[in-house]
Image 1: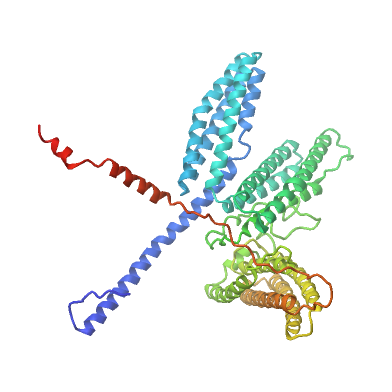
Image 2: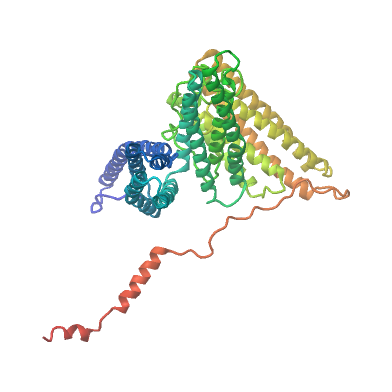
Length: 580
């Protein structure tokens, strides 16, 4: 709708000229607004990254300075107490400072209130903890002084836990996991470098940092999953957490202990009997990194979460210096790794290079992605309406869709896939899922009577086999061409568009297979035999929503109006004030 600036005139030429001028002024103002808005958005993203980086780096092993202070006080060493007290106060001030910075980047009012309350309590309590430690240092044999310090320690730790949880609440988990993954990768490099240089104390210290950050990731993700309804998404995330917590970290701690013992014995008996377990440490470190990355990828699979924009996808782009044991850092096997742990340090093109394609090529990729999104909407309409419990076809279809979305996002420089080797592995996973889906669909077809629906189902299954093979070949050709020629500009566009087209065709075939499987298994199943149906077709239950929505703002307004009516004075009382 446009506004005529000269409504009082009847000249149509004048009128059209006025409208044209108004449109031009409107477009000009919009362009000026966008030019001011873009730097603001970029600055906000950079600030958010920095805040998440500080939170991840500061709120790790928060009780270490406190334990050092208590240990010095129990020894009765007043000089050491003063030194550790200074470190403890600096640590407390740092926690409070980072908490306030996190508040400045959040819009959660209730969360900010809780953070500031916990920070205020820590600010008041920290000097009292130091005084209690000084009293114990002066009277190291006093049980009363020791109990007094224990009370202050418990109180301080309680408020630090409260502050940590409150800060986690106002910090987005995606940013936290991204920077935590980077910090753990940096600690792994330092740990391996210390192992090579034969410094057992540094190995122990950096391994402790890795364990602390990993435990922090486990706590944050577990707390985040408690906010969701139990389902496939939460089960997948918690399974990744369980693997890291129960399998990877105990194995890592055991190998670190063996490595430290070997280093210390090596420093005493340098006779070649004790060999450095360097490769074992590399394997353990690689397992920890991949465990953290699997957790992050599982969290990013949230169907309600939108992928970050190009400007936001810089959280994992830093390249840390690899250790001296290998030209590329830790690897789970004996070969030099050229995968996702060190993007840009190998010949494989990483996800970052897809962002550096020319603008014209990126626009063509976006056109292909739009077609893929249309197919994805068809997939959501036809597949997501079914309950996946007791229906392996829906489970496999959803998994294939997720992997295809990751591969498509890779062509745009986004998503969890970071190298072409990741794309190849994803294509292999799709082929495996396609084989399982193929077998299930053929079993369903075997239970059907001869009909056109059965023939359609068999034809769609053959399409899935064909497109899975095509997607697998496309991903491998993409890697081979770029490795041999080294010219991303030459092969990047063709490879990306071919990959998106293959994914779109496969997703369309999956949609048709799901529809045909439903028709064949429910309408044309051969009822002469006593075989149970292979899958159960049930509609997915709708999401739970509150029966009554309470509008707090309207409620407060209604209360204020009621109070105002109660306090209304009669006119006679108002006039009586002027009688005097």
